[in-house]
Length: 435
Ligand SMILES: CSC[C@H]1O[C@@H](n2cnc3c(O)ncnc32)[C@H](O)[C@@H]1O
Ligand SMILES: [Zn+2]
Image 1 (cartoon, rainbow, N blue to C red):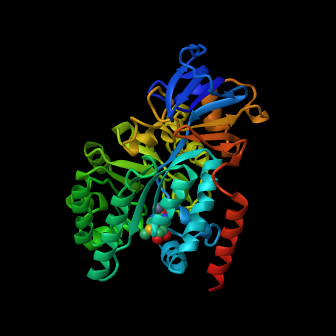
Image 2 (tube, protein in one colour):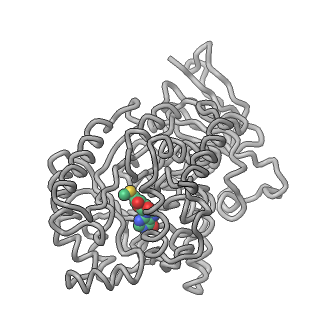
């Protein structure tokens, strides 16, 4: 039985009350068993307990990135300053068509390094060849919610093959890696999957009891095209196909009416707000304050590293807090605690995993990070929650644990060969642009 005692640290719990505790945390076999101001009782501690000195460190739940495409890091910087449609159709898809298995691995690996070193412990990933990402996740120790994204602009036979592959992946990997990997089914978007095909995903989700994930209402053009093609906006379109009758997670949902927000809240649909990607692709600004007000399970995602262009969730947290103040002219919207919850507890809620991750609480999985606050930008040490949102940077992350296992120690990844991964990512990119 392994035991870890974090001694004398500052804990930002991110539970409902978002308490800040100067004290101690004990982890046993990957689960938090003690968190309190007082020194843990001697009866709780084993003789071989591993001790970590918490001085100058702030401990918080690991960040949860609820939407992304990790292998796309190979395309970071390849095409900037385009709108979504041009970027996808003329730049990303032609390059992605050239990806080999090795490229998928190399892109996913550099992304997992980047996520770990900036404090993300759980990530949602939608891509092709997901067995590769899953095997990597098993090795790195991260927690992954993985799904094979399916573009259905092909023959019925190909559609069937893709859906079968997606189901096969989801069923095979769900619960693997000691439960660190869970899966979903993901038709890519209403504009890349015909209605009858989306209906087949819904049917499969019901049959295999898997959640659904898709991109929806990301750009104005997408909404307009949906109306033109199907006579409805994307929310009504997906609703009519039964998409919201199972647990579902929508990426983006930028362009929503009041009625759509009410419907998504009533159907308990989760939304991944991708602040930076939506700005970079000039898609717009999602209605985060209204979504939160309506009680929607909203959280934060980076989207792929080619439209962001990094996987540093601290940036999304900071920008979510700032951007909506600017667009509403109201400095009280998305206060610091709410912004930090978006990257932690609300992330868990969007994935319906709030009983096991997302906050530091006895009984939950020990997915947590430690930031080095003994740096000039944290002084004076006043309101730590404010500092974590308005001041912190992913590079301040000193240590990372997932399920009680340390994955980053003093900014070194313990489960990955970072030099080799950097070299291989570069080699993959050079091969991709040559061919
Ligand atoms: C079929 S795997 C996933 C697929 O999604 C594409 N993608 C990346 N970012 C976005 C985005 O913001 N909106 C829609 N689709 C996106 C990616 O290029 C892959 O092909
Ligand atoms: Zn996406």
